[in-house]
Image (cartoon, rainbow, N blue to C red; front, side, top):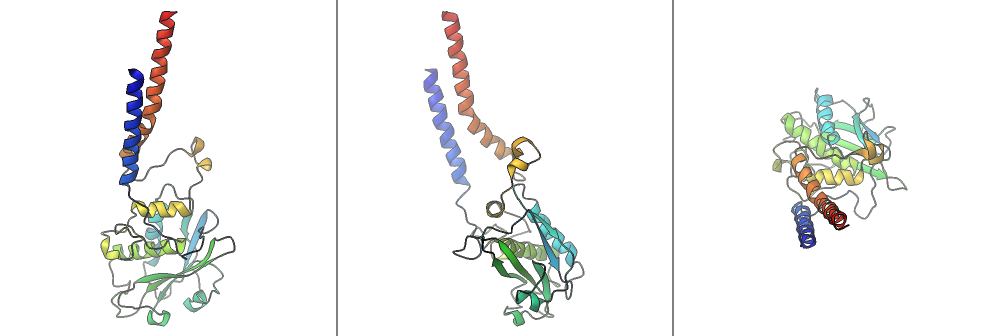
Length: 261
C-alpha cells in the first residue's frame, strides 16, 4: 500500500513540475545576426567607452544605471563596466576603426547615420564577430539632435535608462524579444520602468552563463531571480519530494525486517 502511495506521489510531483515549467512559457528571446552562432563577447568583463561630446551632462550616471540593470542578473557570467572616456568619433566607430570597443556616442544628426530622429532615441550597430563566433566590436548611438522628438536630452531619465539598457542588450548579442514585458521588446512604451523580464534573464544567461564551479560557495551554490525566492523554494520541494518518500519507505521496510528477525 505504501509503495502505491509513493508511486502516486511521484507521478503527481512530476506532473506539478511539468505544469510549473510549462507556465513559464516558451523562450521568446532572439540573438543578433540570424544564422550566425553568436557566442557573445569573450572574457568575463566588458567595458563600454563613452565619447561625451554632445551627450547630456549626466551621461555617466545614465550609463551606470543602465549597466547596473544587467549586472543584477545573478546567473550572468560577464561583468559590465563603464570604461574610460574615448575620443573616437562616430565616423571612426562606424568605419570599424575604433581602437577600443564598444563605444557610445551622442550624435547631433540622426539622419546622417540613416535614422529617423523623431522616433529613434538610440540604436546599437556595427556588431562584428570573430572567427570563433565571439562578438568583438559594437557601437551604441544616442539621439542628441536639437529639436528632435526623440532627443535623449529632452526625455525623462527612466526612459533614457531604458533605451540605453536595451541597446546594451543588442551590444551584448541579444536581438528583439517577442515578450512585450521584456526589456528587449522593441517598443519601450510597453514598459513602465527599465527592468528585466524573465525572458531577458534567460537570453543573457544563454549567452553568458555563470561558471558555477567558480562560485563563492561549494559547487557555486544556487542563485534565484529577485522576487522569486518563494517560487524557487516550492520548485526545490517538489523535486526533492520523491527522494524523501523513497528514503522513508526504505526506512520503514528496514524496521519491519529488524522486528521480524
